[in-house]
Length: 375
Image (cartoon, rainbow, N blue to C red):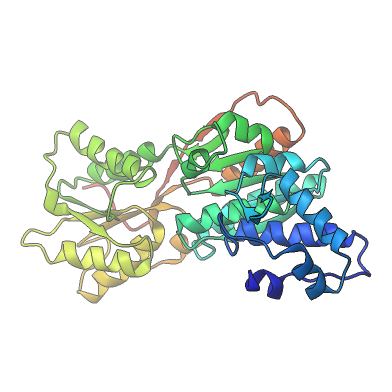
């Protein structure tokens, strides 16, 4: 309660009323998780005295919060915060703000740079302002940002590389009801409910591995994430399918599972594979950053690329063509994914029915010098 007193203020010079200022600030505190369900708001008189305003102004703010389903006032018990109802908050926004939220897993991965560029260029067509939030791969942060963006009354949200199933387990109702309240589009998360844009991830894993098989390799290592999630699992499945269709027996020792998708994780995986009694002759790393790390680690161990070890990545970020040798990779159309997601969201915001609610974008092999000539 004291925290609310410290964080809420009013400015008589603003265009909106003092009651609305109080309401907006408390809504934000609830959406941000600073004020939690079960907490009590300050007594009317206490907050009025703290802000040096009329008691009835605070009462009006509390009534608006109650109308939005954020608090409940009971005689003798004061005003208590309720569970955040995203659907009711979104329905309270009746005027377009020409703002859209974008929730990304990271701002450091170049894949998201290209995706965000696509979103931005599409948004510019109708002068939409973007609020970009980076979660650092933390699912709880994705949920918090979703609530905060909703409290800011954005027109819609694009969520990238995150599972938002928790939204439908916290009193917000079904996916369709939530989409009706606040339009949002999922990107790079296969199987998500409602409108979504995804990549042919299994096809990417298959193309990369098949290319190495066509170069004559039979012992092909895989550097992948520590666990199969909804995005890494299909890529891994493509690797296994390519081996299976070529009649190559899968060797579990050739799969190096690492703790991240970055340069250091790729280097760790490559060193682990190179240290096997029978090392692979080729490696598929499931991101270009991992492949770049693998390339450096292998060179440090005395390997020549591609003479001693062939290498393929996935994404085709700008760095891939700058490596020595340039990296063969599978291109993920991140820019097109961003444009498509924003185009779909703009349609939803305008009340249009989407001709295609779920879009899967193809991937394509980009051949450079890290695999050498066919054997």
